[in-house]
Image 1 (spheres, one colour):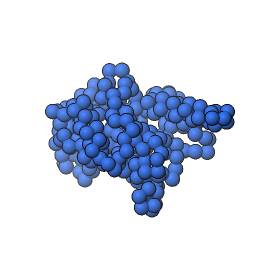
Image 2 (image 1 turned 90 degrees about the vertical axis):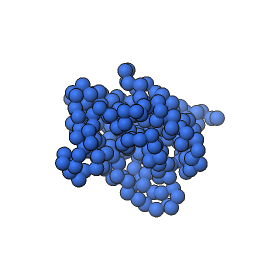
Image 3 (image 1 turned 30 degrees about the vertical axis):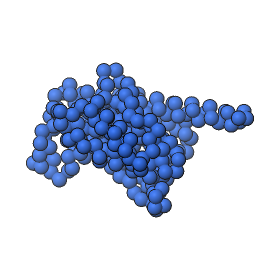
Image 4 (image 1 turned 180 degrees about the vertical axis):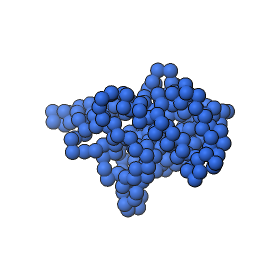
Length: 238
């Protein structure tokens, strides 16, 4: 490998390493938001009388983002506007299977201005988090979200890291049980090329329900997924 190629690889690794650290900053704020919901003894009533026509999954996401996460991101670097967080932001992607343009509504869309230092001042790199309610031991829909990513090439700069967040509503379910079931699904799914199955990853001290997995898209590009499993079994009532 010549010096130019070696320098390119080195800079690429440094950029990915810094990006991963900055995303862990975001996820630390997500976990802190969850912990504050518990500390505040919040209980969310998911009956139609309370949430109206809003989907239960969307309502839980709204409460997390609007009532807690926005503030946590502001406090992370007080006095700056480093983070911009939005819900249901649509980004375009080209399908790697049908080669057609599509719209993708993203559950939680976060722009971190610090990422521009790595990826370029004229870029607008964003981090996407998809949310899922887990009410039973079935993880089919959760794994389907992973499959979708493998089949998409986003037109804007979407970071090579994804976020998947699970609201666990059944008290009999644990993150250890669910991560094991997800790994079983990944092993048996020939449509998803998994480089590394879910492995426990410490993001914030005192919170052990965070994981990382690595996968390959249909165009052979690599991406990683940060998984957060939040126990909402005592936070919600239907």
